[in-house]
Image 1: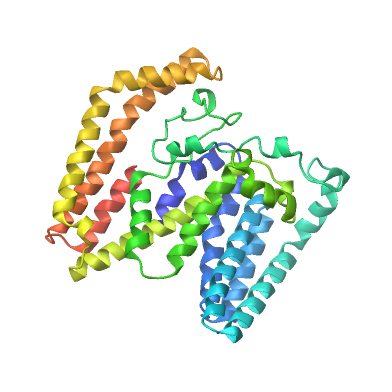
Image 2 (image 1 turned 45 degrees about the vertical axis):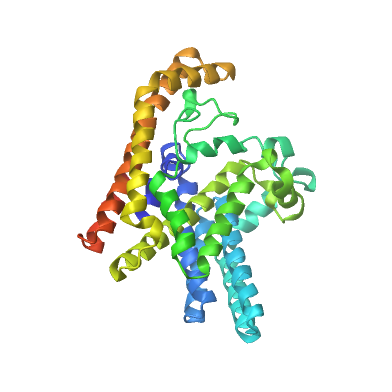
Length: 368
């Protein structure tokens, strides 16, 4: 899961395009989530609160306030998620302890980063993000909103051109697709059915909320609410940036799903959908899709070229390049999906060790 998160096009592009502070800030997000979860679970609260304060404080000192803001949102959402459970079970004392230690961690984190955030807050009044006492202009803030149709790039990275001169999506421009990979998505979904722990709903809910917020002006129901009423949220632009939260949540779910699968595999309690009969039909279906994409590649390419040129956003040679790459990439995605299902099919026979199965699936995911 950690390796997959590091190899996401979104994360790689941060460093490749000069957003080093953003890349460094993102590196603290899994740590903050780990410490916050341990704190909510009552595992040595003083120590976990101190570690959470360090993670949040050092993250803010990396100088990317928007990523830090998203991390605080994750911590707050986790606290709310656990608080609802504690209220339902009548554990008010535990809720109070969690609340006090979480608040203490936040205050300490702000203290650690005060040397940076206080001058920045004072300067904000003279910047485009705070001049006149307000935030950014709504149109400017939502310029980089992800159109829902571009969710296709989660599975097929070349769907709207990969980025830069080849991109023909709804954003003004971009340097990368928000690609997740077939394996990540499959095991994220599997986690919802195989994992028994409540925390799976936190990750699933976080992924859904982050995805909806990334739509920005294309789905203003949630985004406009936060833009108008959440403190400092109107200071930030590029709604699509919050997809790093979605990706962290789904990679975490993927790890949980794979772990749950291995537990079922070792105990011989695989669900019906992951038994050889069902997987055999899945292999046939994916093989058919693979053949179709190979045979009809030229048709796909022509349709995508026409779509790209109709947007009048890309030059003809870049449109041709993007369409050609998209058409040739489709069978690659289905081939990798076929390999993942084939590994599950082989594993369903019970003839290979769980560790080898996990390693093989992990290799396919990393190749993706």
